Amino acid sequence: MRYAAIDIGSNAVRLLIADIIQNNDIVSFKKNTLVRVPLRLGDDAFIDRKISTSKATDLVKTMTAFRNLMDVYKVSEYMACATSAMREAENGTELLKEIKATGIDLEIIAGQEEAKIIYSSHIEQHLGNKKVYLYIDVGGGSTELSVFADTQLVASASFNIGTIRILDNQDKEETWEEMKAWVKTHTQPYKTIYGIGTGGNINKLSRLASNKEDKPISYAKLKSLYEYLNSFSLKDRINVLGLNNDRADVIIPACEIFLTLMKYGRLRQIIVPRVGLVDGIIQTLIDKHLSAVVAEKNLE
Image (tube, rainbow, N blue to C red; front, side):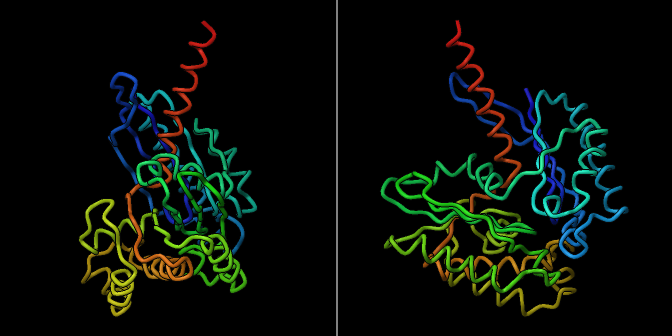
């Protein structure tokens, strides 16, 4: 059995096809195929408040390709979500109809729903009793924050601060201040805060730090990485450091967001599980299936 997840983000569009593995009562998944297309919808959405005709065409073509791939891989169930770029685009609803014509039902999700889906797949393995975590997901258009204490979600919020938004000078000082204040307020009652970070940029930073998956990055290490990367021009980050074109620019504002949140949340280090929205979507589908099985058994 295979499930698929589609994430239409502000920087890139992703398709994850996963093999579902059932071992007695335990259901897990193994990544089979991941396709990433850097459409940069946020450049249109955050500046013009509308997805341009050319990018809309590319998006529809991408969804057609994703639909065909899911058919070839014989995907039994899928879920497709769009985040901040589509949320803010005035023609987002029109695009939904065009995408539906390709055979894909797409849902534009709110920021807090995005956060809920992302941490659903992996947060529990990092939560320890009597520990407090600040969960940070940085995207192209928004940053989702959640605070967990004693394995319970105690607060969550979404802020319009993201890498593409910063590059396009569409971030607002008052939003930065709101985010800093939120972090200070919700972490202040706790003595020690642990960080968990997700998103393509922190995943890449973890690799650049030569860290294994889940090995924490210290504030000092992240700041050192930021200064190192910032010492190169955009061209040299691509040609000398070997970063992808669509990663070389956004990785700098991503560092700035993470460093700011670590500072105001008093985080000495941050764990990077290297997963994202598509992983959370697959887990959401698994949970939905398991709930249906339980409900069916209860009816018998």
